[in-house]
Length: 103
Image 1 (cartoon, rainbow, N blue to C red):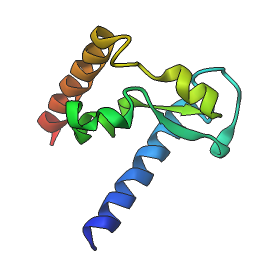
Image 2: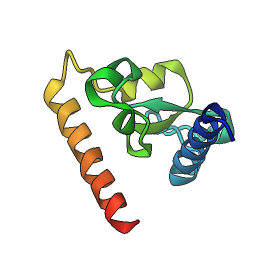
Image 3: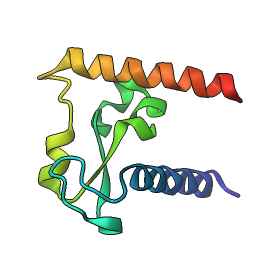
């Protein structure tokens, strides 16, 4: 399996985990959207150089949303809320350490 295929599979697994975690309910507005929704990043992907892919693409940095409006609503702006973004990233890093300890 190629690197691109492994990455694609990992992304699909993450989306499924987020969807199952919330039962297809938009985490911004509460609307039941089922599989028609999509994953939105809490800390935006534009911050990948700052926080790293392991934080940005972690399931805890993803929320199930129904629209671009709701996607925007769940984002933590690093410019407007740097303390919240750093705290969220720290929580994800702690979870990663716990996950690695289980392996």
